Length: 282
Image (cartoon, rainbow, N blue to C red):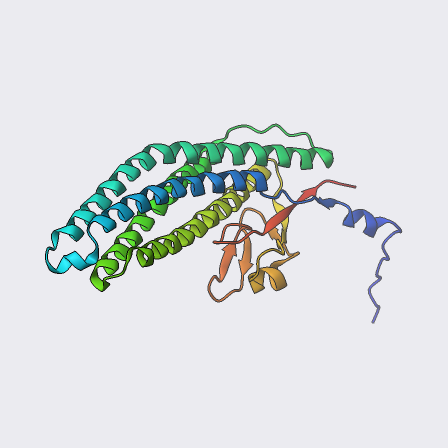
């Protein structure tokens, strides 16, 4: 039987094939924008907290829990004051949240476009970005989500504060015990505000740069783990890091809690990014 003739590749062919695409450096979320957003959310919460502690302390001194056995009205009055305070602050947040969310959205969009343009320009590509329907949809959805998240910070805070005051009266706590609890609640809310700023910055950045890449013909990418955080997702670090994937579809996450295709930076707390792969290099 004749053995099939196997042609050996000509010198240099394999090298040229490997160079037909080029993996670019990643576009990372801007730390300054995240810090500014975090600062705004924390400042908002700090103002609310200072006002709340001042009102509660004044009413608690005038009507301590010991008087509750004789007259139930002090707690009822304090609860009424607290709810009026909540309504007043929520009215202010209702007006401010859309402005803060829109400012954050614009900052991320501008910075992401600028950074991606530079990376593509350094790779020899000249691009011109336009406001496409896909970009408008993503940005509108992001603003709506961030408005909801911004309002959720004081909403959750006041719900917890009401519980602290109720327990204070029910158990006869003194003012120091109550204010200590109030400050602990503030710390929890402050950390949540900081997490929202970080998570939303990463998520919006990932969504915008992905759409921009696809609109400019970049359909492949490599997953890049952030190597940040105390508890990284094992699947992102050990399985997905460095893997090439379809930018339109995402990369499959084998984590039992996920088990679907995802994009870098879109899961809660995920700070992974991607490296664009540009075809056509020789």
